[in-house]
Image (cartoon, rainbow, N blue to C red; front, side, top):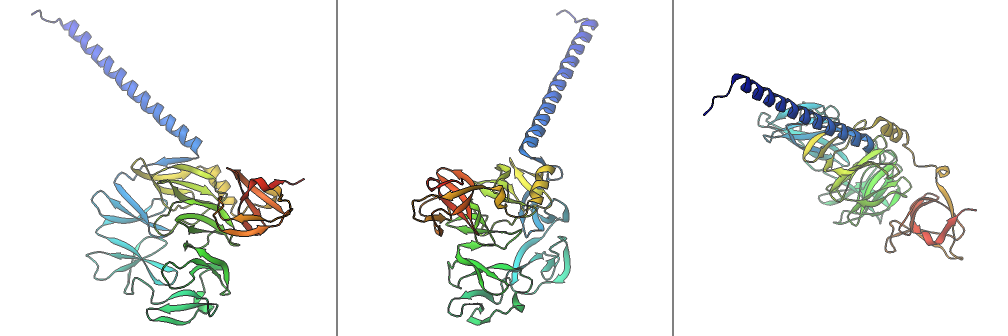
Length: 382
């Protein structure tokens, strides 16, 4: 066999090195192109998503609207704020939400190194030194009493007493309550004067935030305003027995097993392309996409717009229409179908304000009411 010359060896080595360099360049260019494409897609989508610092995070769940618990690859748990700042490193902890008072919750931490459960600061996400020794559920809960027409306290043995103004101090101007202590009782809202503000017609109800509250009917969630009008239709999946509250004009929701973020008008600030999005803070959200956890950040212009639009739309921003039914009234319904509950009846000739029209139904406002009407019986105001 003929021996290869040294010069030929050098040529082959140079060719191999050149091929390696070319391959690395191609890989680098491809990676750069993918990164640019990703950034371009995210810019068009209105957000950025970074997995930096989340390599060992395998799961995350909200504990309240300030703190979440994360689980690492070894199964240990720690705490972080909703914008991703770790406040307690992962360890042999268990964290849970307890409600030892009606409509008020606490975060409790347990660990083999603690003799008793300890409370967690709900704002900072740090484990405190104060022991927790109360029950996981309230000793008494408030329900509406139809016979007394009053919000009343109930315990394990039944009726206790009427709720007083002092009892509800700090709960806000309006808060959710069940119609009775019976299983399956409907929910509504009671105001700070202890009067029914919104009828008991919902399967579940959450507290108001930025003028809107999440409520559920027939297994779907939507958002109502403080007058009881529907601001965002019942189109979204449950997150257990609750849903998120609006913060800075935005809220995460889930639909068809995917998560997105809506603004107050129900428009998608982030499309439904995430596997999970937790409640956020200042336009940042802990999220999961394609099996990876990270921080989802809303673009500044979108966040600023949502943050300044914290009040319902004014009538001047809507389309002016009138009801045209040849004399009869027009049913305003909670949802866009003929079997949905009738919110009110609108007289012929009355002025309404149309938000959107889709599939023959108009999402409208009429006075303090919101809902859906058949688009066949409305016409632009002349």
